[in-house]
Structure formats: structure tokens, C-alpha cells
Image 1 (cartoon, helix red, strand yellow):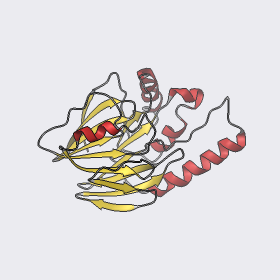
Image 2 (cartoon, rainbow, N blue to C red):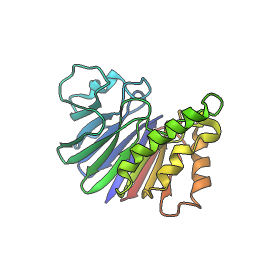
Image 3 (cartoon, rainbow, N blue to C red):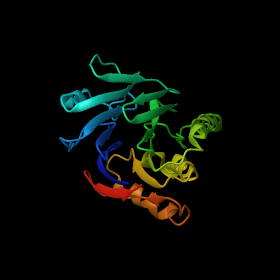
Image 4 (cartoon, rainbow, N blue to C red):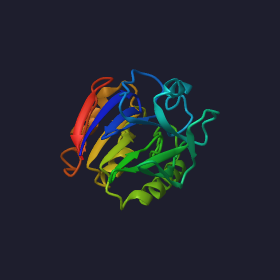
Length: 226
């Protein structure tokens, strides 16, 4: 199945899969929404780099908004979710995980394909700030969540590669690679595109079952088969 992915900015991607068009964590940037698709917006949590009320500027084009319950809004056509839920929205079966920061992560089964979008679910470790106890607690929380999806064959994983974590920029990402997603697309790197290339170059020789992509610019288009 051919899909078209567009990187918008930071953690925002769009995914076009047959008659469906999914938008993840939009807060700014140029969106190119088709007129002939079923459009769905996903919001993982309320942080300003993952959510903006501007998503409702598109409501005439949108079939459903699937939004974490920590986001406060009174709009129509919204399905609110909390962590550890399983819901069905049209052709999608959606499972939510608990973020290690805020809100939820999404595992979406659509047309038999599994799409993982992490939101801010990550093994967050700040080596100049966190104690060993904090590091171990965070790691345990992260592992507890990704263990819930370890037996799911992921066709696409959108996951964090954040250079602010310095030497630990790859800490969560390499654990996701151990789950052998078919495709790995980095996010949450603001405009530090070089960190995505570094991640790709380091881990492509190690995880040969996964195609790892790097990002070079906003509105980059990636077309792939899943």
C-alpha cells in the first residue's frame, strides 16, 4: 500500500493513506489538506509545540478530531481520549498509551496497517540535571508503556530524536528500533535537521529491518510502501 507522508514542522506530520488524511500534532506551518480525503486531526497533548486552536480553522474540511483529554476546547466533532483506551473511529482502531511527559501516544490501525505516533512519550533523560534515581524511574515508565506495543508489527513509527538531550538524543529512539518498525520517521527536533541524519547514519547499519528516514526541510515529502 502506497502512502504519502509530509513533514510539516517539529512533531507535525501528515499521512495520506488511500482515502484518509491524518494530521498529527499541528501547531504551525504550511498544511496541504486535500479536498477529496477523510481528514482527521490527532492531538497528543496540550503543550504549545503540539497543539494550537488553529486546527479548528480547518473544521469545515475535518471529519473528526481525536484529542487528548488534557486539551481544553469546546469545539464540536471532537473525540477526547485518555491513556490506555481502545476506541474505533470510522476505519481506525486507536489505542492510546500514557506519555512519560503529558497526554497520550497513539497506536492507530487503519486498513490493516499500524501507525505509531509517540507525542511526548520518550525516555527523557537530561544528563546534566537528572539524578540516577530520576533516570531509572523514567526508563521504567517508558519501558512499561512500550511493552504494551512490543508484539504489534509497526508499519510506521513517528518518534522523538531530540538534540536537547545531548548524548541521550537517541535513548528512546533506539529502544523503538528494537521493536523493528518497518519505517522510522524522526520528530521533535525543531529545526535541527542534522540530528535526524546523525540518527539515520548511526542506526541504519544496526537495524537492517527498519528504513530510517532523515529530514532536511519543512514540507519534505516521503512516499513509501507499507
